[in-house]
Length: 140
Length: 140
Image 1 (cartoon, one colour):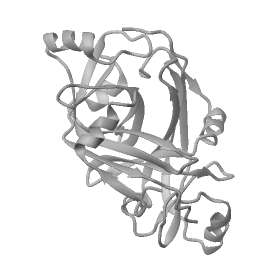
Image 2 (cartoon, helix red, strand yellow):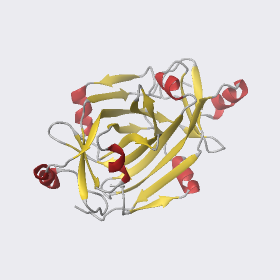
Image 3 (cartoon, rainbow over the protein chains, first blue to last red):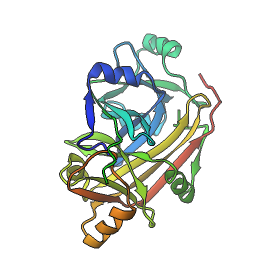
Image 4 (cartoon, rainbow over the protein chains, first blue to last red):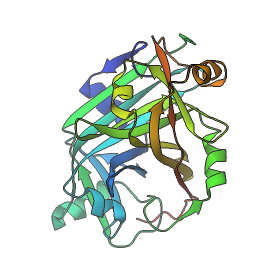
């Protein structure tokens, strides 16, 4: 649906504004040479990086620490054939600085489930793209 | 949130049942050596493959025809810290058989926007995984 006509691009500020309004996005990465995707709750830091919280021993951390990943969030209304999506592409890195970890423990995202040995992962918002479809064209 | 405890796996049939209930998913692939993701509306074919419809000349078709991709759909309730996600991993291929194209023009997904030179892309559901988080653990 969102491949050519019928949508328009969102600028970086608008993308970040929309990202801030949704609780869940999806980390897109490579695992064992295959495309992989995992929904996560997240928050945006003051520098517009995306913050995740997970277990230090998780497969996700192993796969993405130090690697360029994509992060996607969206909101669609199928009945109206409208909605938007934003993709952040940038390097992921576990937060290793103790003071920063402590700060994020207060202001960063909270886990939805019980985790052990929590770490925060920061995704730099090096490239931020987004688009909106306003729908109702109803092409067959 | 979905990385370790607090969630349970969904079997293939349950994954497909849930996929059939949502209109939009996300194709996960590689573009210019970077992870990429694009939301699309879709439908499931009788053989449980995922069907997309897009323009023959789209960047998506160029990137995924003949390639193994992932396809993700989910539904979360942030207030309840619950929800589910399903990931289909398999080979994508443009439908080139004219009879099959004609059949899908009748029963396949409809584009949300105006497209030209429509093609259908089939994603084989070679690997289907899913999980559900029932939330409310509220771990810090």
